[in-house]
Amino acid sequence: MFALLDALERHDGPVHLKQLAEETSLHASTAHRILNALAQNRMVERVGAGSYRLGPRLAELGSRAPAADSANRSAQS
Image (cartoon, rainbow, N blue to C red; front, side):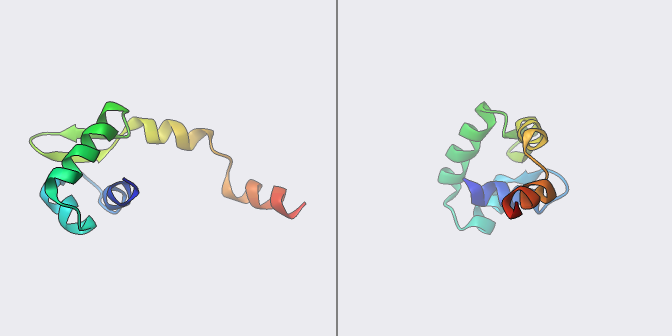
């Protein structure tokens, strides 16, 4: 799952399922199943016929995470 999210993050726009499967060394049917589960939870969005991009839920989660520098300062205290 994280390999697919990482692969999507490396691209500026939508990425076709076949390319994602190749980049992650997953069988296309496995990648498709995982992407569908991620899409149901808004982690990715399906764009057009067989292409995907990162979804809005990731931005929502990221906005709630503490900034890396503040987390580092807390760990040093």
